[in-house]
Amino acid sequence: MAKIFITGIAGGFGLPTAKALSAQGHQVAGSVRNRSGRNADAVATLEGFGAQIVEMDVTDNASAEAGVADAISALNGLDVLFNNAGIGSYGIQELMSPEDMARVFDVNVTGVQRVMRAALPHFRAQGRGTVLYTSSLIGRIATPFYGTYCASKWALEAIVECYRTELSGFGIESCIIEPGAMPTAFFDGMVTPDDPAREAEYGDFAAVPDLSAQGLAQMLEATPDQRPERIAEAVTALLALPFGQKPFRTVVDHTGVGPEIERYNTALHDVTRTVLTNFGIEEMLRLNP
Image (cartoon, rainbow, N blue to C red; front, side):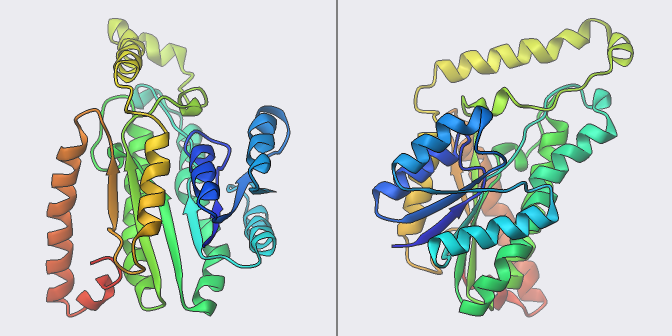
């Protein structure tokens, strides 16, 4: 059984995944920014089935270092890191302030980098590790009103592409999970623009984002298979596969978009392998063939 650390464990994907992994006998620790407040009920539930909880803010260097160290101590080791903490954003792209964009990137991109820098010395020292990442279907394509979020997940995918190759020689495998839209509290905490003067310049079009969001909510309500538990199932299935034989990307979607993203992923995989082969470094793909 594995020792697993999940960032953002109290969120829509983290909690059901932690529950499923604990039920299988894995040792699970997870991070929350604060144990009290809105996380209190989730923390109580998590601790009820044996998960260890550490406080950690992925936007703070010292907190990330301390949080990962606390998780390794609580688990007495670490086999799997699941970079799951994230934040969403929604709105007309021009209206998004640079500060709001920076906030999204600080969690979704730089936050992952902070956690990786804290965890990788442990994995390299033991010569083995598995790292999972929560991306998104719109980390592969861009859809209107999600520009900042898409950009952050595109950036995450690029960083993980590099981690995949650079860490393979150290026995560290990499797996990206790409969910479609899910009905979680993620939508309640999204960064949205606050620029009424500029918004007024868009006229009637300014109402379109809200209409689009309502349509998405109705679609999700009508698609009962599109639930956070599907992510838990994907994670448990990945971890059940032999080391070094896990797919690099796993699409989790029941809305009909998934097959198109898988087709894109296959094409990119072939392009990546060809390019690395031409440079004589295809061996760097060996852990996720």
